Image 1 (cartoon, rainbow, N blue to C red):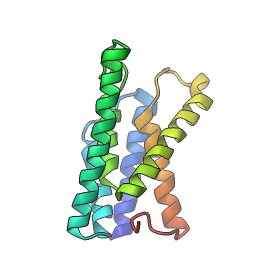
Image 2 (image 1 turned 180 degrees about the horizontal axis):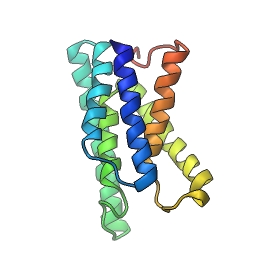
Image 3 (image 1 turned 90 degrees about the vertical axis):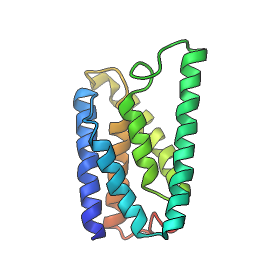
Length: 161
């Protein structure tokens, strides 16, 4: 059952990645599907109360990050926030991502996915049609690599922290 959920999650993340790279626009329904699939994988490894605590903490962390980005954009840079400085799809992906992992794993994966996105964008920006960062796409690609690595190499579980 878990492998089926992982393959479904990889497929959904692949669709997000492809659409974000190709059009800088992702169908909205892919984010709740990704959240549900990642959440089900996460839930299979944990007690209900622990799962709820991790999801709450992760959602709080993401909400704090989004609020700080909003405040910085609006009050310091004096720009519009959504779809100018930060895409709605990127924000929805942050929330979907937050449901999929225990808090410590989430923080580590989230930070490294941001670094991966930045580095990838800097390397490939000359070849890109759009000059904006496909953040949800890069983070999806990073999660695909992480999930595939954990499946193929029987690495320690991402959920046992």
